Image (tube, rainbow, N blue to C red):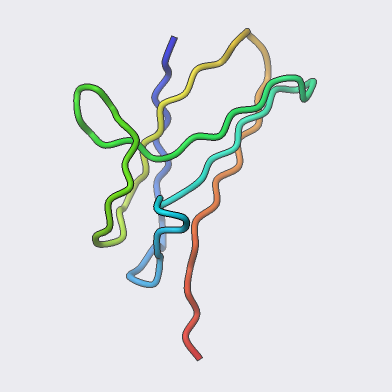
Length: 85
């Protein structure tokens, strides 16, 4: 079953940039490290398809993933922030 997850980007500003075509890359692993998932943001369309669209920094990122079995999971999200010198 697909489960939507919303990540709010508090303090994000115009310096946030897509990395490898996505606003974020999300890694999800289960407690025993036997299940691994890599997810990207999804459009807010009824089908919730993966998004690789450039534009202004979003205030939140929506992903959709599924968990193969009940249990504890950890989630890591990464995005890119370019520092100008």
